[in-house]
Amino acid sequence: MTYQNRPNDLEAFWMPFTANRQFKQTPRMFVSADRMHYKTDDGRSVLDATAGLWCCNAGHNRPKIVEAIRHQAGELDYAPAFQMGHPKVFEFASKLVNVAPKGFDHVFFTNSGSESVETALKMALAFHRVKGEGTRFRLIGRERGYHGVNFGGMSVGGIVTNRKFFGTLLTGVDHLRHTHDPARNAFTCGQPEFGVEFADELERLVTLHDASTIAAVIIEPVAGSTGVLIPPKGYLERIREICTKHGILLIFDEVITGFGRLGTPFGVDYFGVEPDIFTTAKGITNGVIPMGAVFVKKEIYQAFMTGPEHLIEFFHGYTYSGNPLACAAGLGTLETYAEEGLLTRGAELAPYWEDALHSLKDLPHVIDVRNIGLIGGIELESIPGSPSKRAFQVFLDCFAKGLLIRTTGDIIAMSPPLIIEKSQIDQIVETLADVLKAAA
Ligand SMILES: Cc1ncc(COP(=O)(O)O)c(C=O)c1O
Image (cartoon, rainbow, N blue to C red; front, side, top):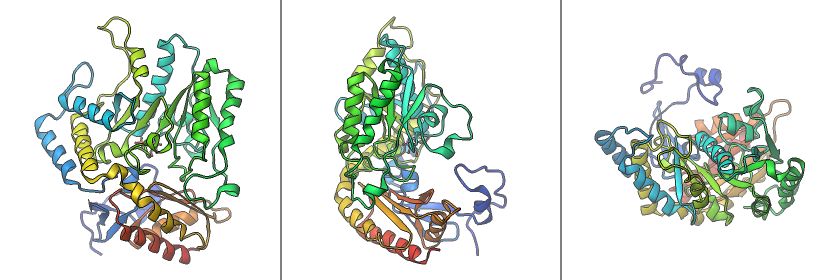
């Protein structure tokens, strides 16, 4: 076998969220990508059913984005993010608030989903303090939630393997229970019927801690990384009601659901439930340059705009907040989304996607199929004593057959680029069916 550009030594790079030893024995390398496909270093074409890592919503190698970055690199490579500005960051912020749900008038730039989460949590804590309610220090997340890998996000997150190695985490954090209820909801198309009452647990936590100590609740509208958990009907509405009743800020983590994934620009639009703050990253630049953004309502921003005008209002930010190349990539991305109607294209494809995925329900080992927008989850029965082994083998077998999926535990999660064609949805399902039929 001849490989294109394969390095001789793979040892130095400690790969993130990867089985390093397994990978380095049998590497899986991408060397190029175009639209719906990756090319491997042994010359194979691989259909991308995960939009990279839930981020390349417009597919790969999109000309407007590539050209914007090339041009920007030659014009203004970097400008200090603190006490200085550059035109593109203001232009991009204005365009973003135009596509954001009404009322989210301000945007704070970060470099990743994890940083967006830290930023949102800090905003919530500081907001209460500037409003004279500094006793609200407590943060509430949810079991199985994923909010990135930094300490705040880990603390409010609820994925055991991501937490148990890392000490005490933040204090003053509590968790709602997750909403997964396969006994009642397995094989539901779209939002499950059962489970609105899981939201009432927030009332229980308020009774336990007292509302005056709680700053914010953070949840993913659709939990992605834990393996696609879709909110039961009425659940998000109920969480919103309880937060409003007790003066608690609601943060939606839209790092995955943002930018068209559900067939609407944001999850806020899809569910018609409004948080006070929402986080984004990934699709904001089509995944091409690292970037994230936190959207807030006017009231949140305005609360900080007090005191002497020469003083910094919010002691937070990153060297690369609003980096010129990232902004250029983001502008090229928004143009691509607009020209091709990608922020709503998922809605047209969702019924086809749903039918295709649910056609897999009777295959061996499949214990649940879940879908919403252009997200799909297929849960497999675990091999007794070897959790995640079955799904990992399915991932390897799909890759060998030219299909990129993602697995988490024994759940297959899919989120293809929003430019996908129906014939490519067929290909995903046919490949998965072949692999599942042969799976041990
Ligand atoms: C909901 C959610 N929040 C935060 C993150 C973290 O994003 P990043 O990996 O860019 O730090 C992710 C990543 O998948 C996510 O799905």
